[in-house]
Image 1 (spheres, rainbow, N blue to C red):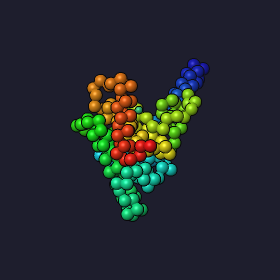
Image 2 (cartoon, rainbow, N blue to C red):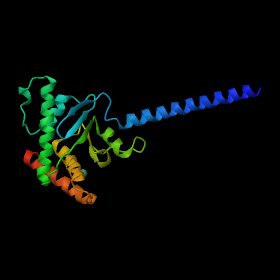
Image 3 (cartoon, rainbow, N blue to C red):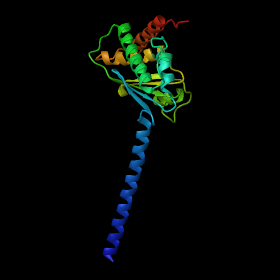
Length: 202
Ligand SMILES: [Zn+2]
């Protein structure tokens, strides 16, 4: 009788452990989905950034957005992915160096992430979380703790990307981060000077 009760208790314990393991696995998967750059993403390693492009964000359209200055003759490139990838690599790194020049900051080394989400809603979720999102109003942001720029593919402009790169550079350059307002002024200045150089100011 006692043996039977013991076996029953052991069985219940094992069932409990299995249940706990199952819930932990579910939580792990939810966290992984929340913070994974994006499922099915194209990844491009540039000198300064790991760029993750979501499914549906085409390489050629992204290259066109990066190449807004017309630095590269996209029509002269074959449609083969490796050339488009090199346009993206060179474009991202050239813009990063432009941002460093505008700030007159020299970084000994830098590596960061650039995650390209399809739209403003996905970017806003990074800032506000899934449940608290009331209005999706963030086309881009830089999160220092992730060392990552999040940007909406649909809304992205070179000026916007330069602005977020400036936040990344500022965050890397200073041991003690300057006040938020100062960071915004500097990032705004970089965006302005990049757009002025591109001739995209109104
Ligand atoms: Zn900003």
